Image (cartoon, rainbow, N blue to C red; front, top):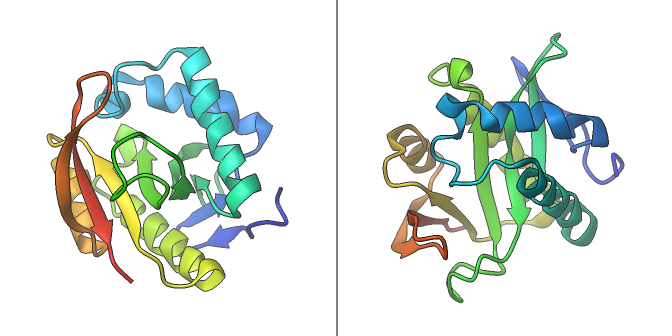
Length: 175
């Protein structure tokens, strides 16, 4: 799978295609209450395994997905980010589209890491797959991610409600 996407390096970060060994380190990140508060109600190991496997399937079937992120020179994961392919049942204007997303450990928020990582991931996606419309889904209370989405070129598409009743803001980034 590593041949699908290169190791991306930025000034401060390394991004790579998820590996089996990344599964439980990422689970520890999303189950931290301060990090996972905007990620939906379930952080059970089985649900995390399904999400992680869905991302692996995105890489295999579509040639893109989320990258695992760490600070350069560190063995510690700080999150994941990228453009992946999924189907959420939210309508034709959202489903079956490349979707951007990012999750960073709470102690790394506010330092520009998410913007740095997503800028690299979006540039890679465009180089490899051409300019395309990309969607994103963010909890309405997540002001930091909504602000980052705006800085990355995303604009509001519409509000939606997930099957579990959670309200979300849907956004899009046009080519």
